[in-house]
Length: 147
Image 1 (tube, rainbow, N blue to C red):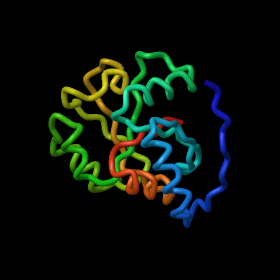
Image 2: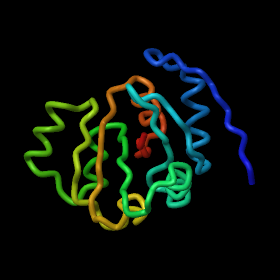
Image 3: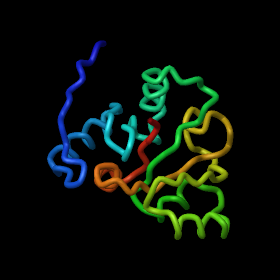
């Protein structure tokens, strides 16, 4: 099945909520979107949907042994994804989140194996870019954020 991409311009500083809502509906169906994250565009998919993650790997032609980082709507979600949050990680999050710093954690068991590439680790970021923040906040769960 071939899907024709839809390109919708979005104000990077003041994202239109209707466009964010449309993107969320597409993510909920297992779709993959491209969205601004700062200097690059990210490929977003539901980070807990194995099929959607597979689509990101296929689009990027990414080797299956390279894990994907994820974007979260808030710090509270980290405890749902990481087996532990060491004090050093908390200090990094306090200092650099929201922002462009990805913190790598030991992943909780049960996360999609293709997301972590079987590494047992998960890279998590709380995005600072207004579009990325609006997207993960409206989606309410992790989104892939690979460029």
